Image 1 (cartoon, chains in turn yellow, green):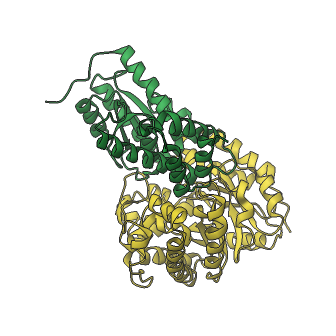
Image 2 (image 1 turned 60 degrees about the vertical axis):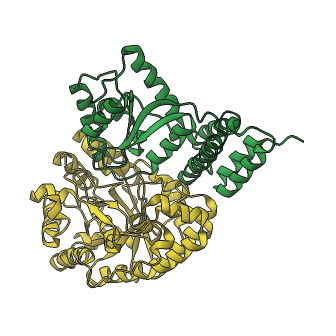
Length: 341
Length: 232
C-alpha cells in the first residue's frame, strides 16, 4: 500500500498494512537540506526539497505545507522575525486592537507573496506525489488568526470584554480563511489541519466557547470543501474534545502529548482519525530507546485501531533532534504492521 | 449581612467579568482607606485564585488568569492615582527585579501576567519586553541592582536561551548574587529543564511568582549582601 491508500483505508475504517505515521517535520526538512531557515521559510522550492528529504529519510505518510503561521499575520501587515532555530514569529502586530483590525484590508490569497509561498509549496509537493502521498495544508482557524494580527492579549480583550467586536472580526476573517482553505485544496492539498485554540476551554471561559468559539468554528469549517483535521495547537484537547465534535468536514483530531488515546477513541467513537501522542519538541531531549518505548506504548494502546495514526504533536520537531530518534517512529509503525486485508 | 468582598471579587474573576470586579472594588472602598486595598482585598483574593489555578480547578482558564492580572492592574492603577492625590505613600517597593522573554521568544502574555502579579505584591518590576538578549538581561541587572532576573520562554527551542543567560551571569562573576527565575509553558511540561538550563527556580503559576522572587532575593542576600556593581 502507498501512503494515500493507507490514509483512504483509515478514513473508511478499513484494514491497512500498517498504522499511519504523521511527522510535524516542516522545520526538520531544513536540517536535512542544509538550507538556512530564512530561505526555507521564503522559497517554496527549497521548502519542498526539505519535505522530499523528510519523505526519503523517514517515510512518513503525510507531507505538510510550511508550519509558518506567522506568515498569515504578515499577510495582514504584522512584522515577522526570522530565527536560526525555529519558524518565524510575529515580532510586531499589524494593529493594536480588534477594532483597529476591522479596518485592515484582507490579503489577496492569489497575490500576496507570503500566501503564495504556502500555496506553491503545496503545489510542488502535490504535483510530485499525486496519488501516492497525501499533502496536508496547515492553517489556523479564524479564531486563531487575530493573535497573529493584533496579539493574544488584544484578542483576549475583545473575546472577554468586547464580544460584539470580536464577533465582527471573526465575521471579517472567516471569508479570508475560507478562500485560503479552498485555494490550498485546489492547489492539491489532500486536506487541511488547523488549530482552534481560542475555542478551547483551557484558554477561554465556557461562555466564550459557547457564544463565540464553537459557533464561529462551525461556520468557518463549513466554508472548507474538503477534509479537516483539528490540531490541539499546544492545549490539552482530550478534556474538551466534545466541544470540537460534530463540526462540518472534520475527519480527525491530533491530541496533545501524552493524552490518553484510548479515552479519546471512547469519546470520539468510530469514524474520525485519531492522531497522537508524542510531543515533537520532546524528541530532541530523548534517547532513541526512549522514543521507541513511547512509540510502542502508543501503538500497543491503539495499533489495532484502523483509524489511528502515530503522530508527533505540539510544535515542530526541533533541529537538534537526532535522526535516530525520528527513525524510531518509522520503525515502530513498520514493526507493528497489521494483518493484510 | 456583611458582604464577603474577597469571595465576590474571586467570583467576578472566575466569570472573567472585569467590570464586575471593578464594581466589587468600588463597593469595598466605601468607608475604607483605599491604601488597604492590597492587603485586605486584592492579595487574599489573588491567593485564593492562585490556589484554584494551580490545582487546575474546572473553569479556570488561561483567560481567567489574564482577567485576574487585569483586575490587579486596575486596582494598582487606582491605588497609584489616589495615593499621588493624597501625597501618601505609594506601594511598598521590593526589588527591583527584571522580567523579559528570552531571545527569539515573542510570547508576552505570561510575562505580562507575572509582571502584574509581582507589582500587586509590591515588587518594583523593570520589564524588558520580548526577544531580550542575555547581555541585556545582565547589563540591566548590574545597572539597576536587580538581584532576580525573571526569564520567560514558551517553547523548548527558545528555552535553551536561558542557558545563555546563565552563562552570562556566571561569566561576570555574579553567580548566586543574581538569581535566575524561569517560567513559561515549556517549564511546566518539562520541569527538569529548570536545572538543566541553569535556572534557580520556577513557579507553578504566575500568581506564585512573588513567593519565588522572595525566596530567590533572600538567597541572593544570604550569599552576598553587598550591592551589585552599578554601571558608571
